[in-house]
Picture 1 (cartoon, rainbow, N blue to C red):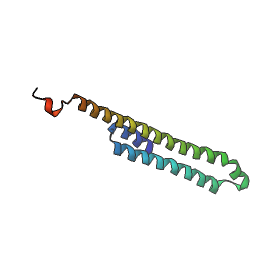
Picture 2: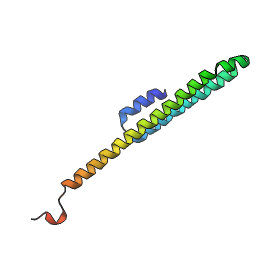
Picture 3: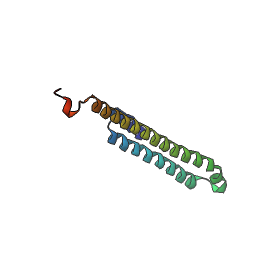
Length: 105
């Protein structure tokens, strides 16, 4: 559901909507990681089962954290592009305007 909402929010182009959907996706990633660790520790048989599943827990945790970091980098890059576009627009509009005293000359 979080991935569906993440893709759906991409169409709206509203920064607040995208940020909330990204937060929801990050929350879902961490929920999956914590649920995996909980299920492994609950249902693993004996100490051998838990020891064998350490790699699975590590991979799931790494994947969740890596996806959140990638999502954060994407958000930062998009924000920087939008800031640069706004700065360019304001710079172009200030260059095109005539100074106040030169209008009648």
